[in-house]
Image 1 (cartoon, rainbow, N blue to C red):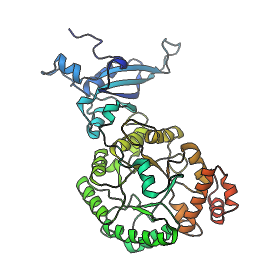
Image 2: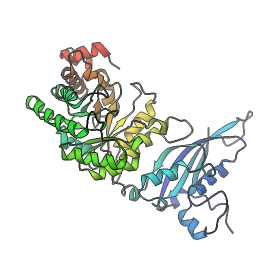
Image 3: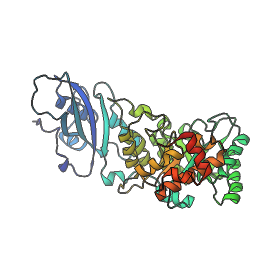
Length: 424
């Protein structure tokens, strides 16, 4: 006879073949949270809304999820004088990894619910992956160390610019923008996420023109800027475009993982032997809802890292995004903190980055980051090259622990930027 304890377990008893998922949900006070949690655990693994033939004790033991923790928010164990109408809960569920294996699409299908009969309105806020399971994912092939070898930059944040305007420039016109920016001595220049492989600006043509421009600029600066073309498309075309771009000379590629899918990003990373930049465009719907979806550190940090992004965009609270400080920092933690078997992903800080923000980012995140400045470079009063140099002066000051205002007193281009945009 089945026991009422069968759907529960202590995490210490599960070994390394279960993934632990933590959810936050809110329920009316008269709803049994144990019943809701166990229905979800069963529904996402072995169950349906009706009993079906074929479910054996052996199958349930091997494939059924277990509830390993559930607590209320706030953690009140006794009734109060005035009972609330709704109560929040933190629920931890252990899911057998044998059910989905090293497949990000199937893992997310299991974690985020399937249909109205078995899902629950809850937000996935954390994942704990067994080391043996996590190591089955590719992860970054280059990561922080590989990007530093590729660029030759060992002791400071990397500097990246994105081509502006976002769309509409023919390759020959964009080449001039690229060249003037590269002459400032920048490490990386990427396409904006709104330009990929349109008819008016084919990726391969841009790669050929920009690669030649990078070499010409390097004769002046000694720094050969790496161009990162955007190859976002449906999976088959994306991989074909990426391979053609690499054959034409590209030393890195970019895709928007939320629109192509995490599994497609993983396939792209396996298809090309160059670093892959994961852009967060389209990811906000995954984490913006307070009661559904997943947390930003998972959507923008852990999952792109597992999929093989060598560098990935991070949303910050200092630009136009509405993200809070805690998930911004925790997203970077998910990218950079040591994880057995998975190399770190280098965070790309974008959105409102200018010389007056550099000190804050370095103080909060360290130097294993990429600073992505768009308007602060292209819109510098002295031109794109001056914008690059102003950012470099700000980076050098931050690494040396020098206040940016002191550095601005020495470097005119930096002072112009600080006068224009201030310091945060």
